[in-house]
Image (cartoon, rainbow, N blue to C red):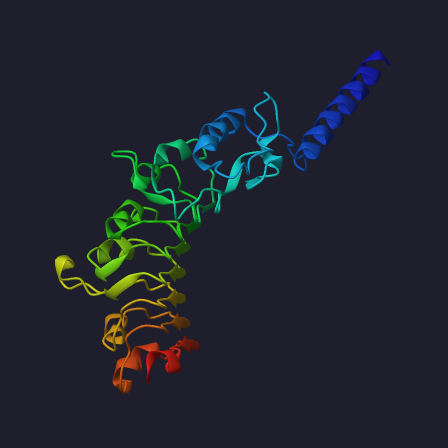
Length: 276
């Protein structure tokens, strides 16, 4: 009799443990990871130009998942989104970023640094140091900064990128780093508007063209491209949207140059602005 009661007790205990473990599958974590909270506080002085970080409390144990501009995984508490948009006087105060400060955020998927006044990175502390850590980074917005052509090389190993915004920077001339962009093999959206770019075909890269076969949306508005741009984009086999208004398109466009764009659903050439 005693053995049967003991057996019943053990079975009930085992069932309770199983129910507890099953319940934990649906648990959420309310607080962020401590070392990521500390890392965010180290970033604060570089971006807190307008005192935007009042919610970034230095009190130990403060939940950084509730801070402005922060998005966390509700299960693990790890940071997956960081938005520092326009928190520094970008057009008045250019500076060089130490990208290593982002290394603790190993699960980051989205990083927004719009209008941050970044002119580049500290020597040996550029974005290239993040590529082996940021294996899940999908969205990167560096628009409205002061970045030049060479900066693209530091992004060439971010193989998980699907969205890249480099609009309103200082990219110019005949693009010298085509291969750097071509390494972003699953990129779907590329925004390069309001720079001073002239062409994508680079003689420095053995006359390579842009070959992003997953690219669906390309914005080239307000650059210095002429009619020959269509030939240099003929490797973008999956392109669905092309915006190219406010460039230097003139006269008639040879329709043969558009043969590669049979999949393009939307082409915005801003005809009146181009003088066609």
